[in-house]
Amino acid sequence: MNALGNIFWLLLGGILIALIYYIVGLLLCITVIGIPFGVQLFKFGTYALWPFGHELVDKPGEPGCVSVVMNVIWILLGWWEISVIHLICGIICCVTIVGIPFGVQHFKMIIPTLLPFGKEIR
Image (cartoon, rainbow, N blue to C red; front, side):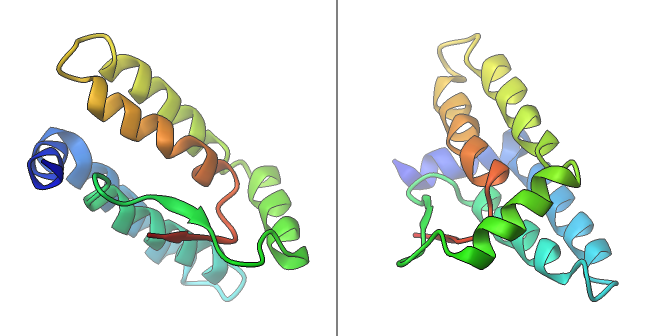
């Protein structure tokens, strides 16, 4: 069932979401300061390709001091808007019964995209 959900996810916009994450991640990796933020976007891009059957969870021993500081910088730089986009997409997907599983996947991405540092894909 996860494979079927992932296939439909890809066809209905998952590839576009992942592509946006990867492109912005590459742009951020141009500068040394942007590399940690680009790496987080690569992580989200990978998760956006195959969200069914996977989850973003806290790494063992997190949140640490560095993760908290980086999450604050992430929010102050305006990357919290990614969470708002997933909220809006989730609400739109949940309008129909068929779109509810896709809306749930968008809702699952809200907290990790708001506080990305210290997360891993499992």
